[in-house]
Image 1 (cartoon, chains in turn orange, cyan):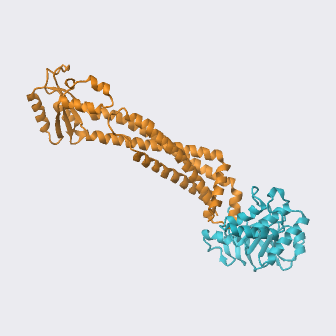
Image 2 (cartoon, rainbow over the protein chains, first blue to last red):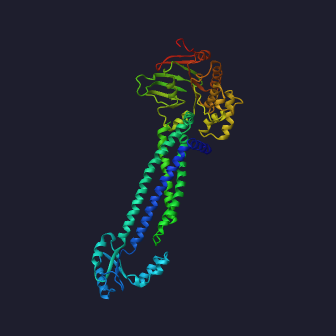
Image 3 (cartoon, rainbow over the protein chains, first blue to last red):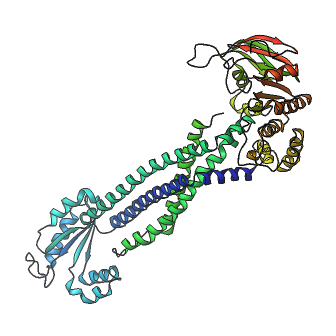
Length: 302
Length: 229
């Protein structure tokens, strides 16, 4: 095997149809980066969902002194509180755990959650925050209605808020965005496959004299096809390098910016990014290599 | 060296056979002219030897290989034993004379040192001394055909197939080409040459196989081209 001969052939091939090669690299780069972005979105959504599901799922806000809600008549009494707790504790199939959060505790949580927003923290005092019962459900999606109707409107209850219903809207937005990205990426992958096939075919046609002579003098199939195959793979790798740069940009600009709107640490790590980039490389190289191989079997027969 | 046993070749969508019941043997070191009008099956004969085509019927033996039994991946090994020269030279216009000949060795994985040594020898053998660094378009037709012959012979094949090698060359230059082919033949290489050139066939007085409509109509030692053409 004469490696420098093979590389010389690849170089000639890539240079001879430069425009096709550039088009190929660009399409591979865009499709891989969109695919990667889709994967990053999937990871991000999963990450935040897991985070939230481990957190409180229903908050029962209780009346407190100075509450402006008309259903409240002053702060909740001890009897009202124990009656609500009894109701909740009487549903062991649905309720996993009930925790009472006092106004002072609520303020501490608020401070740590909003640590990025010191200006907001400084305007709030513990007496302005409602005490609450934080309910952890056995099965969040099925039990929400049962539990929330059980305590809704009970004396001393200000409001019942399921954080999941708020988040679901956000998730469906993210999911829709991710699906759109993946669909566009898949269309581009198809375009990339067709472009690889066409580029290799053009390249084989451009060098039909060479390959004809190679066949006649008894060069092996492997030797004849390898330069074309590597040509496809190298274009794929070049596209991947650009895609990797774009993905790093997506992660550091878009997702990290998005992250600022949540005061929770559910961001993607460098490890997640590397995983996606490596996956993109495998997809890119496999896509180009396999397409080139199949094309060559059709156009460069012995 | 080459043995055809009742070989018939019919191309798809053709009523007439390109070769019909061809049965002949070419011995090692022989020089054979293949003559006959266009479409008589000369090219099919050569393509069958190279295993570019496979016969519909009969058996072909080339350099000890039964071509029907040869697997696809062994075809390159067969072709390394066969050199080929064509009417249209088939040189690579972007490579020099030396690179064109070296290419044939390069693509079968020969080491660079070997190529550097062997290529100039062969170029001298075909009479291209001092033209190693020319580009094909700087050479005359006869010289280009010499390059093609050097490329066909550089790997010392057992068989040299020539498909109308003098078809694009004037008679005076053709004599030189035939001298090179004769020289290659004298090294022990079997030469099969398809041609329309009566003067050459008549002057060489070698074995002549005449094909007509795919059939062998004459097989004559020390033959001439024939009257009909």
